[in-house]
Image 1 (tube, rainbow, N blue to C red):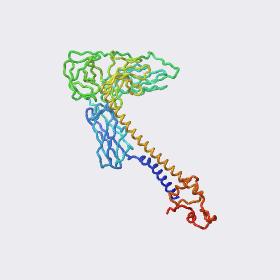
Image 2: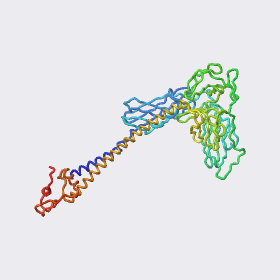
Image 3: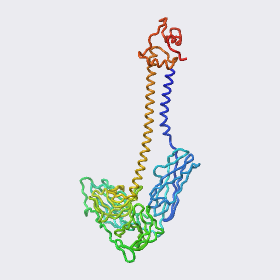
Image 4: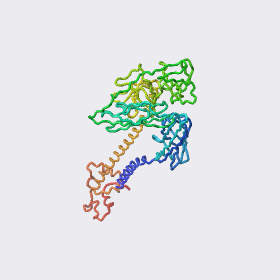
Length: 529
């Protein structure tokens, strides 16, 4: 019985050990709090934002991602992607760590800085999680010279028409659409090229809907235009004064190079800026010397896109970057749309391009600027021709409802292919890592199964011996494992009858007056002692 008890105790300890393993790994992480400071300044100046991490124990290191509006500020000496990393990688002996980052103010307005993604923080040698965080703000003030024009020069919807007709000074309108319309396509252009436009509420549900067009002037002042649209129920038909039509556009803008070196685009005269001092160069571009119409000027060239950009300035002093087509010798506005990690430059749609069937050429507002696109019949998607920051050039599909972008018949450059290969390498490495983890876990499970089978076999053997001994009235505590094994190997499940001098004594019978040990001596077995 002692051996049985030892075996049962071993099994119990083993099971308890296995059950404690998940509890160990479920140990709660250390907790930290994160706060982000606020700052203010004028366009062109630099401000400092500080991220402070606080814990109950010493902080070993930290990496935290912070989101911000990249159209208002940009990090100094880092890529302007809309997310910046704050890192403190050195070991510290303090429960509070502060990490600072300088930002340059590039436009008027206010942006909120917040913790985003998974923070990597180590406290006293253990991983930590962010239990609370507070956001910061950067308020960007505009110089006195900045324009306050926040009006629209045009506003159209598709399908449907505005009532009353559009006027820059009127900010509220009404419209009606059919029951099958789920998205309202809004085309808006600002009166001032430096102003920005954002549109919300384009989804159309049955009944009343509100679409808001927000115009932010160069100096940060805001004006909102609101369209109240009624979507009819099934079976109803909209009655409008004019048939809903897609705006017709010409594919090629009217341009001319003047004798004085200026260029006229759509009736507006621009001069080509030759010195880029004080001009912010877009991310992913570098300044180069360029031969433009026989003159050496400064231009910028995309590292991966290969596009040539020049800065044009109108007669009223306002300017911006334009894409220069070296073959056609023409300019087009430098308009971009972006997703979290990729930026797309929207290129003009020319007659030489092969256009996908089933789409109509129109103008559409993307990222606050009016561009040429191909719109599908259901007004759910549009195609624009452009080039991505990875070097992919071709058609891209833009979802009207959420602004997501997908490649559509893309022609990839060699640089882009190299980037894709690099990404595939990372993916392969990740797959190998997880495969290794799965193999290790599989080996652990197999080992556990083998041990369990061995223990169950041993337990079955002991159970058999115990049942046999109980039937024969034998106390197994007094016998060696060898004798117990003999019991287990007995094919008849019992020992043969013993030759005793008297049949009055039966082992295990307390009425005999003899102890169990004395009675068991009648058996021809070796004492464990």
